[in-house]
Amino acid sequence: MIKKLTQLTFLVMLSAAAFAQTTPPATAPTGQPQQRRRNQPRHYAITIVNNTKVNVDTAQINADFKAVYPGFAAADGYRTKREVTMRIIDTAKKFTLSAVAGEIVVNGRWIKDKKNFAGFQNSLQEALHKNWTSVDTTRKDGYQLVFINKNSAFNPAIRKDLVETFFTVFPVLVSTFNDKTTHEVVFVTDTAYGGVAEASGNRILFSTKYMNAHPTDIDIVTHEGFHLVQGYGYSAGPVWLTEGIADFIRYKYGVDNIGSKWTMPAVTYCQNKRKEI
Image (cartoon, rainbow, N blue to C red; front, side):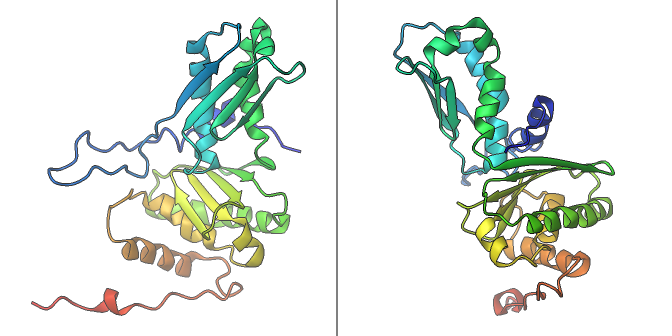
């Protein structure tokens, strides 16, 4: 059963990654393609397809959509569809509404009721939450972690270890290196993600396939958590340097590198060689 977040927590916490703090210049330097920075707000749009005789306030639906969907998408992952189609139908009697990434379906007879229309934002939020197995919020010493699990087969013992690692390491990294880093972070576990883990905005995405196979590799939290502390944005420097710094932080601050049999990656030839003058 999904543990519901309050509407305020959902909008403030999960929208943080969608409506972030750093915006790039309006125009890129001459001859260079403009790139989206890591924290640049993403565009979300809804197209309403209404083939029924029910008239709806499209402006209000648009406002409700923008209040809910960007937060869901930011938590769900940056690959979540940003162009959404909402279909209003009149072919089902008991059906109310359903919502998945990229599509919302609403019963015209249901939304015609003023009470239902007034509560559309909350109903949409609840429908989107059903795409996840569980949502849990933990608060400790001024930090908040929202843990979204999208895989019912994810080992709960690993979840516990990831949460404990976060509250052990992340506050130390923030206070030591960048006290302006967000204190509110989202963890997402996903079966569709093919990598190991990644950080974006205030969200860290974990591969449930990898974590179930490597349950001791909990210091992924330390590495990815430091990416949130770095906050460089895309194209801010060579990837090997950004990742190398995060690896060193894991080496220095990791809680169980020995248990996971992790060691600092060796320096490669390309990293070590010097340019001839």
